[in-house]
Image 1 (cartoon, one colour):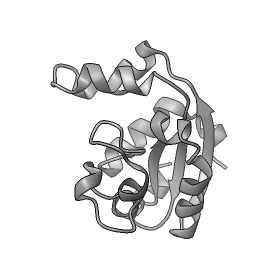
Image 2: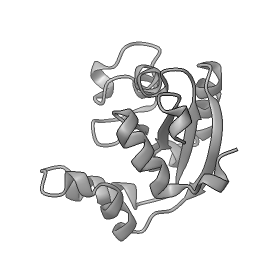
Image 3: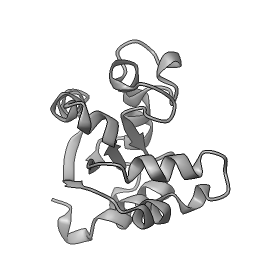
Image 4: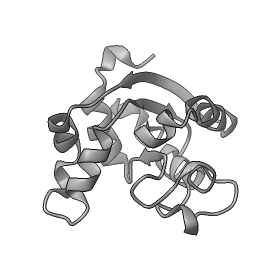
Length: 142
């Protein structure tokens, strides 16, 4: 994946959006935003898996609630490809707080709160590589 640094990012359609039936609408927005989906699967994380993924946030006030929420139901994990993928995906998602997100962003349309805001995206190319490898093998990237 090193040859594609900057072109790949990791995304999650979170349990709130999956549970509300918005998975297809969000995927349509991703494709409409010019992304290519390189890998995708629906999973239901255990609490332990969620804690492992969000280990970087352990000890922060939101950690317990976040890991509980992320293991509360199915979510869709994806690898997205586009030039400048991390920034492009973060721009399409919008601000973490849906009430502060710009009109037309995914979180503005589908997010309910800071904690249940429909989607996750990597915040850097380095974290994208780490997050992708947490859920996908290189063989799964097509």
